[in-house]
Image (cartoon, rainbow, N blue to C red; front, side, top):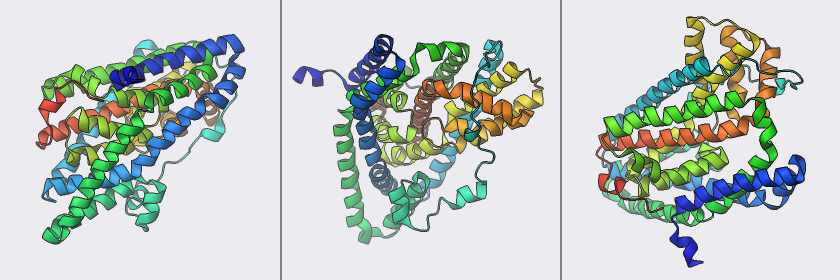
Length: 426
């Protein structure tokens, strides 16, 4: 088996992704879609679910230890202020450009023209009428029970606890040094465990993608192929243009090296469709391959997995135009602006789990008067193939997290450019 480990991990993951698609589609054609999906679900998919459980297992200890170690490494609590402002500002800017690209793709390709809505089973049960009030969301960041927050995996609450704990260590001076050393060692140990878990990635990716390919099949894709193409082109354009300008032109760093360094995380994000589940891999790639110091990777990336949903904002914009075109709603410039603004706002609140954006679609569609009945029909049409598009937008979300982390790290002097420009090691 030594030959297996001589192949770079990102190459093994990509190979597994391609083989998973081929295996799932081949089995679906040979056995029939329902039988193939059931067989893979019983005998293959559990490997993928095991992989997801392994990386989810690492989320809480990874955030908690690396963020505290990162705060301690800063040496001054005041540095957190500039880091936080830069992070949130960049996430908002990239989301703005995602909205523009999404609406552009929806306008140019017009995926809703001629959409066949006959015999679509409405899904009104997935309509979320009101988002969580912003005040409640902000208050939930401060947990009443820190232990419960850690147990629940509440990322924003864990970030808040870790920041306070790290600041407390810094303010304690010499008395806090033993604790600082403990968390520095703990973060190194958790990152090493993440390396072990990533060796399972090719098998997990194969299993997850094979199930998706078999359960969806080619027939489901053909029904709304133009929409899928519009979403994929839009996401690819956003990754290449927005993140490309940020990395290559603004930061003057090699773009290909950036994408190669994040290949493992992108592949895992694509297969799991969960930015939260991908977080341990994202942090490992950013630290080992891009040279982002713990002080940035441990704080910017967990925050990004929670609030940076560029792919979701772009997707909601395209779905809004798809709906308008399919049902004949006339849109004004103000409608376009409201779609962009609403998609950006609700995407920030989207959970980092598969298909979360469909629960928020009704809020965006209400901006130009779409009826609940029409919304339910659109969701019923999209739901069977949403996973295919969700995988791509999650990969873009993770890429955006890494791009912003790179920019923040360089501006804070926390980026090892020599490591960034060195060929990936994982």
